[in-house]
Amino acid sequence: SPQRTLVLLKPDAVARGLVGEILSRIERKAHWRITALELRTLDAATLEQHYAEHLDKPFYGELVDFMSSGPSIAVMVEGESVVEGVRLLAGRTNPLQAGPGTIRGDYASHVQENLIHASDCVDAAEREIKIFFPGRA
Ligand code: CMP
Image (cartoon, rainbow, N blue to C red; front, side, top):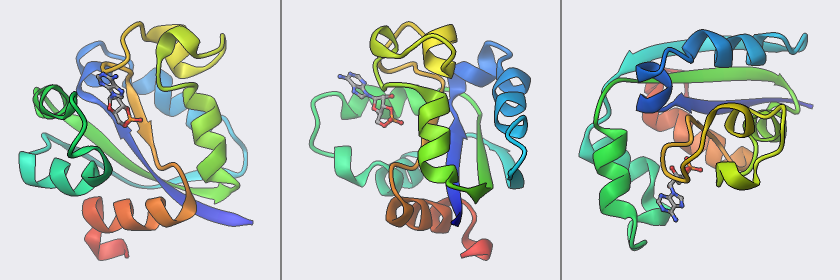
């Protein structure tokens, strides 16, 4: 069924010049389309909304420092089974456990600086789209 998801290319992806590589992997899927895209440096308030479930984690402070360290790219992607599909393309959170051929498996080596965020379910996608593209909710 058609879905939409929220993808963030994190500051490490922009800094390392991996934006084109990551977006082309997403665009290669015939049934997916990029329907919104914005380059933006995320602030603490935006990150608090986006990462509400991680607020009490020991790594939250570091996560905010990293995620606000430079521009990210927020992307909305629409298409068949896109929520689970982009997560498969991204690979496991910890790049050491991410398979070959996944974005994290191929390019990342640190659990925090793992290049890409993708909504973990349809409900999360709709919640996150409201944060990054409020006009599209
Ligand atoms: P993401 O899946 O976007 O959502 C939460 C993020 O927190 C995760 O990617 C990593 O960037 C970061 N993260 C998760 N686990 C850890 C950890 N153990 N230490 C540091 N950062 C983490």
